[in-house]
Image (cartoon, rainbow, N blue to C red):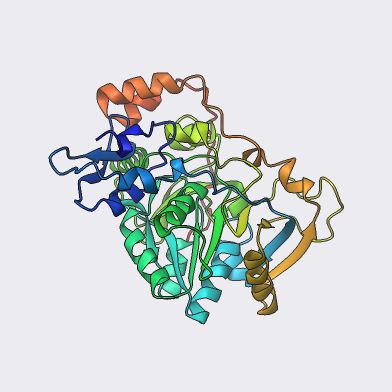
Length: 384
């Protein structure tokens, strides 16, 4: 087993699942460790030491970072309803819509209460709606890797929007960039294990005596730029917290407490990008050049390849998006994740030690003893 995935450290492994997908004897399965993070676990009795897992692991590839964006745009979805319900400017939604209309196979992340965030193949507008808005939690792409590879091998065009570590896994799986593969990476601060969010929501449900049917990290009823974490049961909201209110998950995520270990060493948090296009919030908008349009709900879009530029021009030509060229410095000078990874909070070890001993997210989060602001939203706030 000297040439197996066990050589990859936790500081490197992003849980992309490629090792499981390529193992010829099904000896590898992604399993939770003592901290709730998914890592490959090898059945020694089934492993034949072929080394396929290590050869395809994106941590072993140095050819992935070959391009840096040469054009930066401020952009938004021209469909006002789609823009309202999506994160930032709703660019991913516009891309999904375009792909669906053109017969391009595409995959997005949907959150299913009690089960977590997983990639699904988008086949209709209902699937697009499920994939809108941000999911600040680990999303599992492993089950969809074989289908993505299958589509590419038969010449089907594929659009894949995801975290750069996931896209790197796909590139390693299929043997490099393909003419029929369009990659769009998302600027990421880090991902938390699914177990944390699942436990947290279950705790709230028990306390509030409700069952979650829909969740938002950026609730459109408050404006997606407000980062309000909300839970709904059949259209009626029963829980909502802003970033700095008394919600353990919100506080932990935005303070970089709960991420996977590799997120703090992320080699994708840099100017060179995996994707043909990169999308993110636009925190530096207007810092270098005056803005003549409304800054609310605007995405930053960066093009790193001719394929990416052509795809972007098609979206503009079809009237899907509004796009304005911006100085590159507005993206690279003001978006920290384009320069370096997140820095772990000083109390991270306190949380991890408690969680490893108890497996209880709420108990572990209480150990942190943050000074929290208790604020109440208006009782007559309009819900769905």
